[in-house]
Length: 189
Image 1 (cartoon, rainbow, N blue to C red):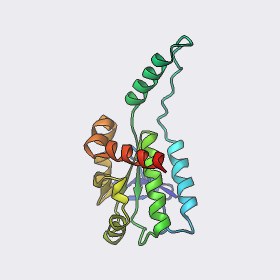
Image 2 (image 1 turned 60 degrees about the vertical axis):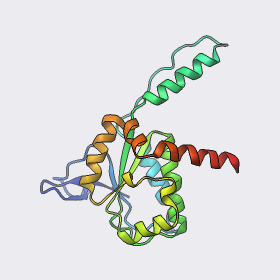
Image 3 (image 1 turned 90 degrees about the vertical axis):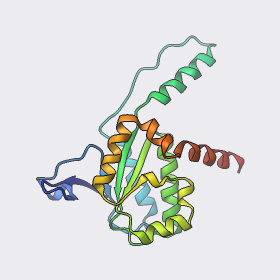
Image 4 (image 1 turned 30 degrees about the horizontal axis):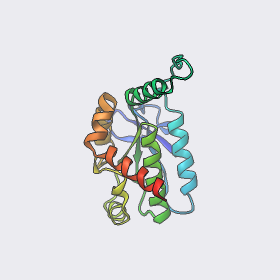
């Protein structure tokens, strides 16, 4: 897993290999291998680690609510969850020439898991053959086309919109409904 940085010419390269690389507004990471069964667990661990170490951390002390007032507590927690900012991670998928079924399932799992944590994964530079695989395998049952961009620059523009108003972006992309449908399916099984 490599973090990407923007060079003065506008290209994106592995940040630790170029001293002139400037970190973008959100993490842009590249997994330098096709996403297949042999490296799915490593991929998921690396993504979770990257998201866990995001530079912006929002922690607030819980407000003291008297015991017995569970309804008030639940309302407060729900309100805080809705107001919490969205995080964004961009995956540079330019090295993914193929993804097998386990790789597709890993992507689905991470998309849903991160949405519940108010983190949106945006995908850049996904090859058309891989996108065809994703469509056929039902990835767009959990993901939105608004999460896929032809270049890192386009994905960064979307990331700015998410950071400005993540809830609006997620709702416009239809992800709220997809999350709800997927959580209903998982409770039915």
